[in-house]
Image (cartoon, rainbow, N blue to C red; front, side, top):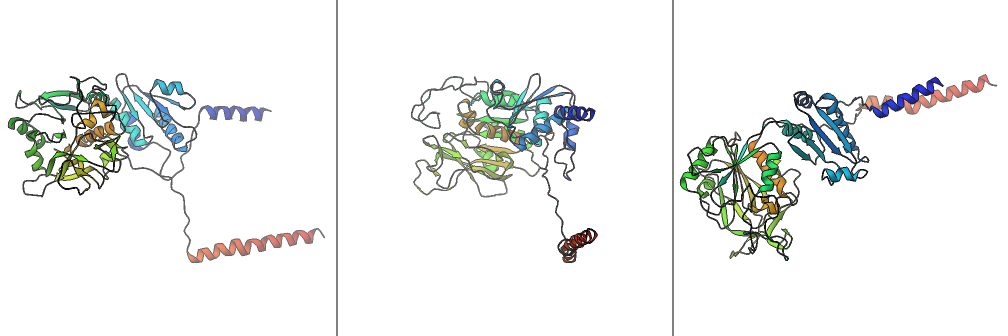
Length: 439
């Protein structure tokens, strides 16, 4: 009876305190050394809320990994829920799918939708770090305003669903039209966001980590262009969200980086969003960190970005990030021959300093479209790529390795003889001896 009580109590304790002994050669079920160092460096409370599907082994492993984090660091509080069993909690956190994790401190919150160790650690770094840099938006050229309200700030077109100045017939735009949702996402990730006018002083971009030029409608002066050039030469990153048919004054800077922008919009009759062929939709990307695991993005009224022939004045190597389908054509072009047309291009240096990304559209990241499918994630991925923070980790995936036994021909013959010949003979001999003793 006492043995039964001990075994029963031991089972109850194991249920409440599950623990694994990791015997895998790759240490698949143990935190990485980098993870342990990051967790030990925490000095403020971090709450992790993980929503998982109890039927998924992958999510069960992710849950166990996060629970290990809470055991390593006293600053981590870990909670887990199954959204199917506790929908009210999922609704409270505005989580729709299992596999989502929310990392939260006193004044910052980050949502992660990829349940793996790299994403978890980077979320901890972002949520617990001080400001990760200053993202400066240029001002004074009727750009999309990052200080705008975070809402749909224009009337809806019944036939199209959305309309923009560059993506269809203009209906009515509110005064605060801009990139408020993008600014909010940057601030949540730990960046500070400011507007800078380049005409005020020669060092207007001082203390900026990244400069975003979001859909300018008037041209930059030569002095402003010189400021942007000097900022880039000193290692500053640029994200240029341009529009077709607008002379921005930035064309000389694009030429020195081997990029030309079209005057006309791109039409893609094969892959487009909703019913507007002037809004190419991209789901098949070039292989790059910016586009890894990225869902569909779409660009309302986008210009083509074409590589220029390399010259002695060309500074950067260009890498296209997003293409249309092979049916892409330019609006009002005399040629009807379609081809894949680049919509976003990375111009990079070998030392990753002074990099630039150019997109032939800015509307994809405004309030109206930022939250749709992968548009917002694409914007944030470009910011992360350009800033290339050294404190973010990139762990190599660790997979369970099935042990294999490789035998030589002689060894295989020995195994065959032992199992197929000698084994049965021994059993027959034992049986014969037993029969003789019982006669």
